[in-house]
Length: 241
Image (cartoon, rainbow, N blue to C red; front, side, top):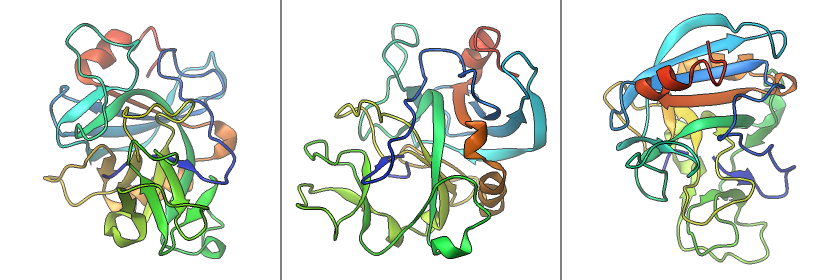
């Protein structure tokens, strides 16, 4: 699965804000829009604002992205109409809604990533993101060699996944972690424009690195991810660009 988790032993990420407008504290916005719930390709744009009442200003160019192999699904039961898809473990959908971008990860040692302005997690041989719903570490990124007891039968071995050479963790299903609602949601490198993921959002490596250089934890960056019809419906209510 190409997706975010909490980091064991790290400071907990801010709670995802999926049922309210973009938080007032957010000064950076990553906006992903796809044509529909079941489509796998879309577009990402970046925006900044100087205050909660200021207009969002576009930064850089639009970037092509791919999402889950089954499209998008609401990341909260409180959103959407009857019949809309809602995110579940293993459904092949990326979460729709508003989510914090809390930390970054990659293969490179931390000492070489001083240009990153998010907390950075270097992936080592034992780094795994647990997707086993029966585990106490569900939806958590851990070093299996440092936990008291390995209680999971399924996890992503992150260091073995080439698309995880550099990426950003999406604060989805973190506070509280709800078993079965989806795990390991990331922004990461894609396999090409015709590819898809198991629940993440992916795009070219150069654009992942550009995004990572731009994101700043002091600006409280968020990801807004929606199909086009929902974006049009919520644009004014959520004060989106």
